[in-house]
Length: 168
Image: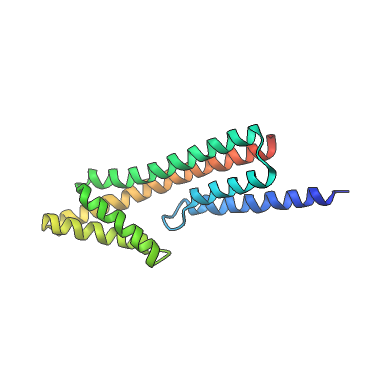
């Protein structure tokens, strides 16, 4: 017969695993911070089960993966925009638009305002809507690569957490 503690532990692991899976799916969109969600789930897991040495090591790896994945996300978006000809000022405008849109118009406002802000900044800078559209297209392509990157890092976070649960 399964004891109450075992049932509650399994239920807790299933809840954390569910949050991990939702976070992994969320990495495919710029709307929900999936890597942050997965990191927070791992933190809650560690706090509840009480970190041991292996837990701290795995949580450290998960933290590095979440941080690097989040940074690469921004690098791909900015890099793709730069490659398409956008200025750093326009990329900054896109980031500002993403921040404002995420706060004021969730869930899609961040992406929408980032695209609008980079287009407007580039149009004002170049006075050429076609070149402004190219920079905007670069941002969109960067968003695609960023989503792939976030998913890969999210998968690695999930794998690390599963190793923590099943091996340690």
